[in-house]
Each structure stands twice: as C-alpha cells, then as structure tokens.
Length: 249
Image (cartoon, rainbow, N blue to C red; front, side):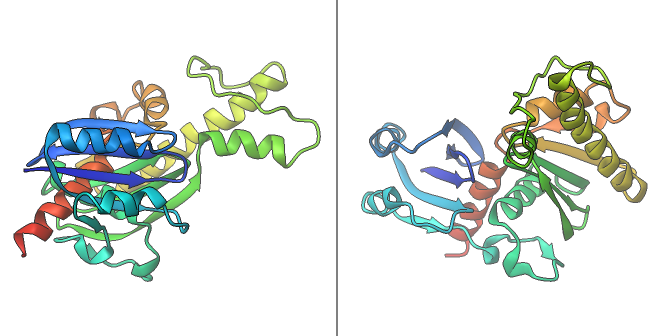
C-alpha cells in the first residue's frame, strides 16, 4: 500500500511517495500540477495521502485530490512519541513538528538538532528521550538578500554564490554576500556550539531547500563528522505520522 506525503511550504510544495518506510519518489514543485499528481497516484497505486501546510489560504487542488483518495491533514496530535514542552504548542509550525518527527524516526535514541534551511532557517532540538523544548527561527538565505534590497535605497538585490568563501567583500556585491552568507555561517555554528555544550553526542541534521548551502559551508568545520543531510526529512516525518495513525485505527 503506497502513501503520498505532501509538504506545502512558504515557497514550494514537496511530495513524496512511500511504501512502508521506503521513499520511492520525491518531487519539489513551484506550483502544484494536479494532473501530474493524479498520474503519480495511479502509477504507484497510492491509497491515501497526508498533508502538512504552513499556508493559511486554501489550496483548491487539495479538494480535488480528496475526491480521488482519502486525504488526512497532519496535526499536532499526530506527533506520536514526541514529548512536546513548547509553551504554546498550538503555535508550533507543523513543518517544524514533522521535521522533528522525521529526525526521531531516522535517528532514534540520540540527541538531535534539526536545521531546516528554507524560506526561514529553523533550529529545533529533540533529545534522546524524545523531549522537544523549543527552537529558533531566523530569516533564510534568500529572505536576507531580498530584505537588504527592499529596506534600503541603493543596495542591489544580489544572488547567493556557493563559491564565495572570503570573510570580507571588496565591492558592494561581495560585501553583501559576505554579510549574508558569512552571517548565516556564523549563526549556524553558534547554534551548533550551544547545543553541543548540552548534548555532546549530538546528531546535526540539515534539511530544506538551502541545506546544500549549509552543507557546503559546514563541511570543513569541526562539526563535520556530526552532520547528516536529509533533504526529505519533513516528508519522512509525515509518513511516520500517517503510519502511526493507521496503526491506531
């Protein structure tokens, strides 16, 4: 029995087709094409879907999808085994919770720090006892570049450059790259150092659209041996949630 996991983010829609715990196929979409999605459902004989969304507005294609297969909306009560100590649990983003659930499944019984580099960068820790106390949210890579252009009169909008490695810029463009990319690097290293003080055997899990950038800048750091890259972590968490949901029926 194949299942479909759908992660509707701020910028893109990610889909994954699972057989048990095995991810058979993963795709990322600028815009959802319902016809292609229904074709995948037929090809893999998908029998149900689970959806997580960070958007407030309705997605019309979801109603059409629900006319073909049962669609379950991921909610905070489906994060089985996570001891959620967030002071306002109903405000915790579903994507963050699904990522923590995916980390729990992929690296059981260990301390884990999930760094999700998407539209925003989020940092979420879950300890070996599956306790989640909270995390951090900061602007993502592209948001920082866009903000500099939007909130100033003369600074240009600059694209990221994964090959940029200097600690300073010698013109306006490279100065912006230095500030944005090195700023993220120092931020990430600072968070990792803080978590490592409390959790010496820490698994650091990178996910999200800009995880390649973080993997590039962190691969030569002292934490390189602790870093795992899991581009489909949220999808894996959603799949774990729907599996547990089915087991409880």
